[in-house]
Image (tube, rainbow, N blue to C red):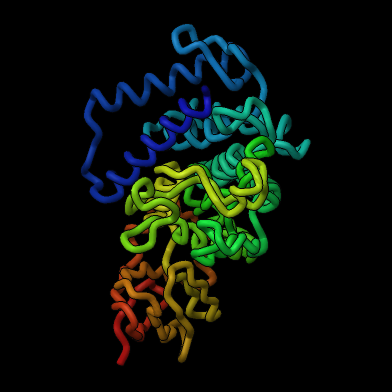
Length: 379
């Protein structure tokens, strides 16, 4: 399945970017380089030979076995990032060519298909968000605003897959008993008629980046809802989402059932067990800030489960009052920047530069943030 091959290439190169950003002197081993480049070359060979990556390819010959669909929507992001990391302009060119092809065949007609492995070519949200990721990465790699325009058009499709209201689950259902708020969850596809805790399998930071690059607060609000939503579905000690013998601490199920597609008794229920949303949650924790603020405009957005407000401000600085109403100590990552810097490209692993502050369970602290991104405690 081309989605899985492209996912592998994209996430391995993201990991390489992270390691390099942590240590500029770090270099991947020759064996790792060869493996990554071999995968990129095999995908590129198939694309050049067939003019597409299709949905399924023969893993030995590279022949496109099942063509069409948007299954390879993350591949442009993978090619672009690999091209940037390994200084391969031909990879970046291939990324733009493939993105243009998918744009014409899927985005402009308004339907993306084939992202999940089990739905054949049903319309789905996974390929839509993968396409958004590719357009945003292409903009970051090339600085070509054409891709920013395509990203906005794709984001408009993506939000139609997101729940915009809180469904009233049956009181005796697993989600009803936990009083779960469903706004921000993401519908999977038209075959599996359920929503899911998050975006499969991304953090959604492409929406956050798109807000910064365009100023459109719709994208900021959507990622705020989705990032805030996903943590509700984590099983933990004393709060299992379903059977505690199956849903162990840390497990998240992919089902957020609004419908009776799995029978009326399963509305508000799910298929219990560990699943991909755990990856989406981990990515959310390391790619999306806990609090975002522009001190000069006083724009404040809270993603984490804390409460924050601007209680004082001056030229290029603001005092943020932060309260933790939960029973858990919080490490809150704060991203502060002036509004004039919001258009600058973040790239990969940007969160490494964002300071993390501690706010104990039930505690309140005040922090001074300035436009340089610095955060200090205020008394």
